[in-house]
Length: 394
Image 1: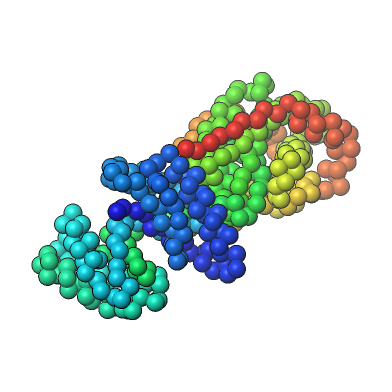
Image 2: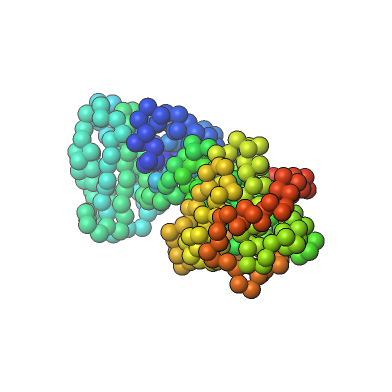
C-alpha cells in the first residue's frame, strides 16, 4: 500500500496551537492535490499521511506529487513510502516481508537503515530495529552496510501498529502553514522584486491579494498581461488568488499638472498606497506588501521610503528590504517568476518619468503639493475603474 509521508518542522514548535495549524496544513494539501488520486489525508504523530488510491500508476502520480507538495508551505520534507502493519509486541516479520517485496526495485551496492519511532510505546528502540532490519536486508540481498556513504538509505518510520518504508526524502519549502498569518495586499509591479516579496510573505503564512497599477490606454497592456501571468504562477502556492488591475494613467496626469517633475514618483507611490489600502480594508487585510529593496532605485532610498510610508495607515511591510539584487534574482529564478518578470513592458511609473527624481524630499513639502490635489476624488477615481480577476490552482 503506497502513501506519501510528509513531515513538518516549525509547526511542531507551536504548542497548544499545533493541532489547529496541522489541520490547516492538511486542508492546504487537499487543495494542492485535489485533482490527483489521493483518497485521504490524515494526521499521524509528528507527520501527515497522503493515502494513494489502489491501482494507481504510482510512478506517474509521484511525479505530479513532487511538484505539488514541494510548493506547500509548512512541509519540511516528504517521501513516497510503502506502508506495512507491524506487531505491537515488537515482532518485525511483517515489516521484513513488506520491505523484501520492494527492495529489489532499488539499485544499490551498499545501504544503511535509518529508523525513527513516532510512537515511543513501540517496545524496540530505533537502533534495535535498524540493526535487525539491516541484518535481514544484508542476508537477503548480499549487499554491504555502509553507515557513512551508502548508495541507498532506507528510512523506516514506526508507529505502534504500522510502519512506513521509503528510499528517499525530498525537501519541502518549509515555512509556516499558509493562512495562519492572515491576509496582506501586495502591490505587484510586474518586475522582478514584488513577486518574490509576495512569495516570501506566503512562506510566512500570509495569503496575498494582488494589486497592479497600469497606465492603459496611455501605455500598452503589456504590464497587465505580465501581472496576470505572475499571479497565475504564484497561485500554485496559495491555490486561489485575486488580482485588482487599477488604471492609474489619468491620476498620474493630474499629478503632473500640479507637482514638479522631481517629486512625481513620490506622489505616484503615495496614491498607490492609499488605493491599495482601501482594497486591503475590503478584505480585512492587516498590511500592505511592496518589493522595495533599500537603495535599489531613487524611490527606495531612506528618505523616500519614509515619505511614501507616511501615506499608509496600515502597516507597510518590505520583505526584501535587506536583500541585494543578485539575491532577489536568485530567488525569482528558484520560484519560477524570473522569466516572466524580465519580459519588456511599459510600467506605469515610466509614464511622465522625471530625469532626476528627488532623493531627499521634505515631508512637509510633499504634503503641500498634495493640498493642490483632491486626494479623496483621485483615490475614488482609481477604485471606481478597477478590474478584478480571480485565479485558481490546480
